Amino acid sequence: MKPYFNIDVDIARDLVMIRMGGFFGPEAIEQFVTARNAAHARLQCGPHEHMTLNDVTDMSIQSQEMVMSFQRLLADPTHRSRKLAFVHASTLARMQLQRAAAFRNVAYFRTAEEAEAWLFEDNEDAIPATRSANSR
Image 1 (tube, rainbow, N blue to C red):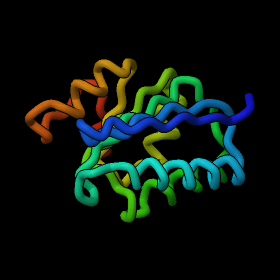
Image 2 (image 1 turned 30 degrees about the horizontal axis):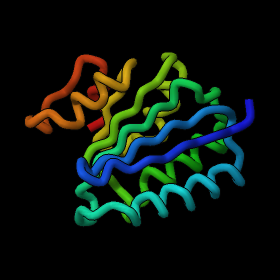
Image 3 (image 1 turned 60 degrees about the horizontal axis):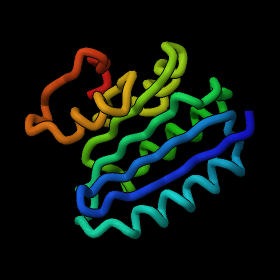
């Protein structure tokens, strides 16, 4: 499946909403980074004060090379969000996400509604049932 992504910014809530799908290659990741940087430039909050909801339910299982590329992308502190929630469709996709986001405060969900509820809850230390214990 051809890679795609959509990025939207809810400025009032300091929220970046991303939807990704397909099988990514280096060119698609470069395009994504450019679009992500442009979206972050639209935010009006301070650095690292925004939250990100990334829906990857249509994402194909990625090559090891692309998982490593996403890992480098997520490890870069320049655009790090305060909280990051992934919506995924399969256990294998979640495992790849966990490898890519190993050093982040991340939670994993089956629905966007659950992810958004976690992002906006008052207690940032709460761990949802679908969240991996080693993702902290």
